[in-house]
Length: 249
Image 1 (cartoon, one colour):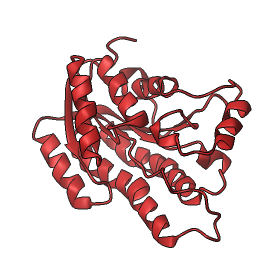
Image 2 (tube, helix red, strand yellow; image 1 turned 180 degrees about the vertical axis):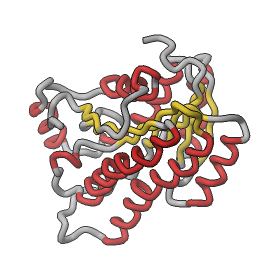
Image 3 (cartoon, rainbow, N blue to C red; image 1 turned 60 degrees about the horizontal axis):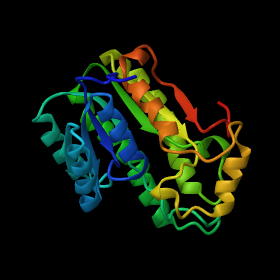
Image 4 (cartoon, one colour; image 1 turned 180 degrees about the horizontal axis):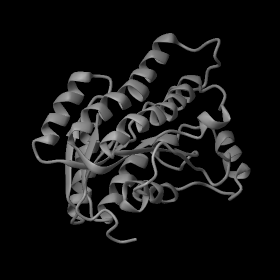
C-alpha cells in the first residue's frame, strides 16, 4: 500500500495523541503531507516533531473546536500554504464524559460535548471545503457506541450518532463539488484516551467481537488511508464500522 497518498496534503484534527496521531503517522507513511491540529499545544509539538524526525512532511496548528474564531484563523493559515486533498475529523471530547445515567447527566457537559463533537466537526468541515480540491476525501470519525447504544455515555453516543447523520447530509451537498465524505465507526481501541475506560467495558468488547481480542490503532488506520485515497473515489456518504465485528452495519 506504499504511496497511496503520495502528493496529497491532509488535515487531521485531534492529532496530538491517540488514534489521531496514528492516523497522522499512517497517512505520512503513505506519502502525504500531514497538517496536524489539536488543542493540546505541548503534545502536538512533540508529536509533530516526532514525525518530522522520521523524515515525514508535517505541519501543525493549535486549534479549539469549541471556538469558531480559532477554527477560522487556523484554516486561514493552512490555506495560505496551499490547497488540501483531504480532511480527517477525529478530534472529540471522550475522556470524562461517561459514567452517569441519563437522569443524572450534567446539561452543561452535554452542551460542551455537542459543541466540540458535533458543531466543531461541522465548522472544521465548513472551513476546509473552500481549500479542498476536486476529488478530495473527508473522513469523519464516529464510534460504534452509536450503533449499539452504549449505556452511561449518552452525550458521547448522541454526538457520534449526529456525526453519522451529518456525514450523509454533507455527502449530498459536497457531491456537487466532487468531494467525498464518509464516516468510520471504530470500536473501543487501546490508546491513551481509553485508559480510563473500566476493565469490564474492555472485556465486553474483546470477548464480544467476531474477531475476538483487543483492537489496536493499526487495526483502524488502514480504513482511513483507503477512504482518503483514490481507491475509494466513488464512495461517499457511507459508514464503515471498524470494530472486529462487535456490531454489524
